Amino acid sequence: MTGPPPPPPSAAAQIADAQRVDWPSDWMRATLGLLALRALTAGPSYGYAIIGDLERHGFGEIKGGTLYPLLSRFETAGLVSTEWRAGDGGPGRKFFALTDYGRAELARLSRDWRRFTDLSVHYLDPERHLKEQPA
Amino acid sequence: MMQNTIEEKWCDELVLELRIQGVSGAVIGDTVASAHELLDDTGKHADEVFGSARDYAAALELPAPPA
Image 1 (spheres, each protein chain N blue to C red):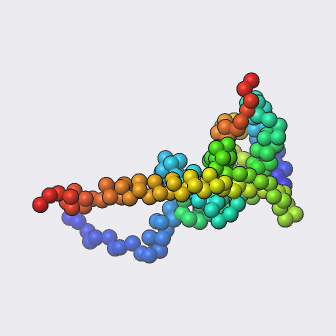
Image 2 (cartoon, rainbow over the protein chains, first blue to last red):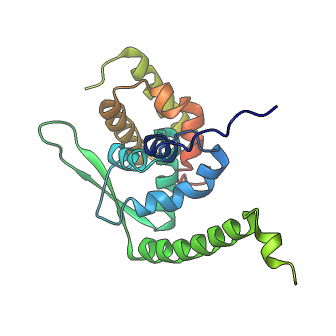
Image 3 (cartoon, one colour):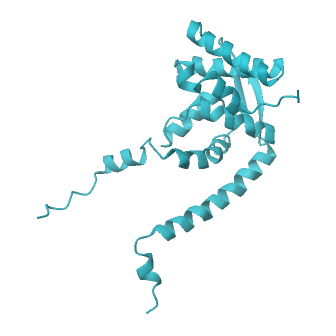
């Protein structure tokens, strides 16, 4: 005995799903570097602002213990540069900026990531074997 | 500014771990100031934001001259 099919998810539910914050941690490990570089394309930014930007875009709350080691390694690798700027009456903030090398790497890795996700989406398509079977 | 003694203890542990690694004083100062900045911004506890001071110090992989 099967019940009626569930109603299609509402627009609000779809948006909430798009904003889910519990992505598998290994997915985040694989992509956070790329995402963090992308967060700097609009201009230099600092830890809390980068974390906020990623959260607003649906990636969940990234911990400082995850983000800063990544940025530290990027600095060592020459992908980002850092600079302390005075705050408005408060303590200063450490700003991270993309170097030319970082910008080039972001462009290269973004292209590769697009190819990889296109391949994955195609491979995962449940209808694929039907479409690919010779007539 | 952050004045909680729990956070100060965490920062002391961070400094100690980085000193053990042989990280330069300037880089240690930068790292601690950067941690203070995010703790002030988030208003959260250091353990919650960064994990243990020892793990955080290790994860940063800061340059240290060979001993």
